[in-house]
Image (tube, rainbow, N blue to C red):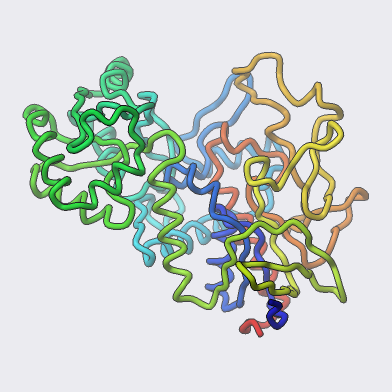
Length: 436
């Protein structure tokens, strides 16, 4: 059954970090928005917000202050997405995003919001027993970063049957770096003989009060000589802050979570918080994948189908936040990397043999990881001649060229700032208003 055509000032295609950020910034500007896309990639997120920490190269350089690193990066790579934004725009993007997420129930802890000088990275513990630099951490990880900074005694607890998270292995790795860590293993109440366990299932179990109480009693004997307790991220999907407070009050110790291997509970929480919040806002979200977008009378036109209903969307502006290969914003056809919706030119090595370095662990990274869409300073994609492809088409997030967000530890930052700059430019050219 066809529904009336929906006219909107802005459509956001994609529901990952860049898509969420674009919708949030548009809402803050009073721009009515239609968003389409499955919130899938965010489920692989650690829950932290990286800005920048590593300058890749044959000898990678680490930066405590992400802005110092960005300045060095832009000097070395003048086409990087960060070259198109100012420090002030970066700060505003992070502040607006974290303020929105706090209103949705996920509080982030990072630098003093409006300070120009105190934006230093902090460290979280990874399942590999390494220290990962990041800029903003969710409240559930704050006690861990403070314990590392304060050289406190940490006990990490793992769960029998939980794959990819070994407390003793992590403790040995951290001890070699001078961090005071011990490890212990417990059997999860009610699943002592369950075999392989998944974090999501355990998170649901801990939402039950009697399971949480049993879990706390199993943990308690291991905390005699430590200051802080570290757990895999399993403390619930929706009531995670309350569950952590209950544990801290009962145990008398700060408790923090460690992000696990993907798919992660921390990413699921962000997805659920976002989806729950936008239900109260002037934002229509269709959790489907769009495969065809047409240009008609200077508008972007596509259809969304849910169940038996099909609706046509006509948007004056469009932000492409479809991600890279996992999000299917990029794909491979005829030995070339292609942009999948508009067939935009993709900056990439001349042929497939140049995609990868000979050394799998090359510290400089692989050229394919820097493939993507070139844009102007407003993040509007360019055509083959180097001109703007369409004056009201924008791109944001990992689909952008000249960045290697995994090595740079810049994924959230690139997504937030490109979405922020794109929405700012859109706001200059259209009046705020509701969709019709």
